[in-house]
Image 1 (cartoon, rainbow, N blue to C red):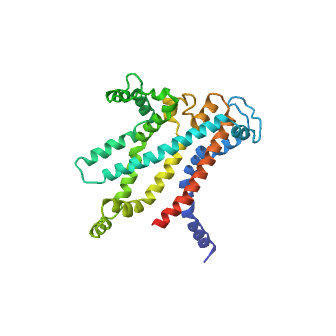
Image 2 (cartoon, one colour):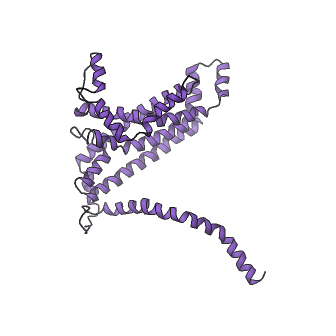
Image 3 (tube, rainbow, N blue to C red):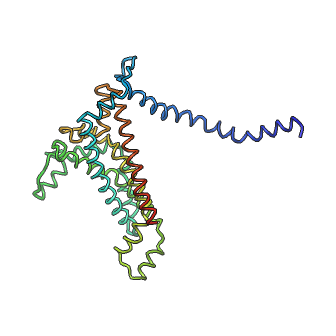
Length: 302
């Protein structure tokens, strides 16, 4: 092989990977600019006392983190977020599973029901929050109107510290129900009918089929919904911002809303960045625990 042929061979050898890199390079640059750079920059900010306006950033080391872990306000917001997660996630998953089972049957108008239940998912959270503000209104809201019809107590939903968080959980569950329902529905439709037919021949009833066939084969779907629901619950913000602004008496002051207030109301960008990193660490640890514990359990089931 002469020298010219050897150069041509080397050029063709690197042509394909070079073309691939040229194609993906814009995406990598944009992703780095809008993803990695803010992440790294906020890590640096969490070590400063920057107020978002002054050109100078004073390095305070771990001062923001020390302040954070000695702040009763942060512990309250963390407890409120845990309360939201512990109630909203199981409630939403159970309702979505029941709905998925109900819509996995051959009934008249099935596509209409599926569309109706999925519509809140594609509706803006802001719009949904405003509608639910009207529904929860103590004097003329529809919720209290129906409660009065049955002679039940009519709480001041969003103005009462005891009822504000349950009201938010109810609204959020309704908003996200369709998404989890679709995932469960996809999982249910992936289970072969032969399993149910064989079980019925052996005399298994509906509950036995659900317990020994449906639940085990839905394990991967359930695990995915559980992980994403917990992550989403720790990031709840929009409905809190619109409906309660963290009140009354900080009863709905979740972590992300607390972060928002410190960043854009008090201009404590360094402290807000520290909150963001602590929240990230909590979500990461919870996800790893779920992956370790639940993932192993599901793998043994399968």
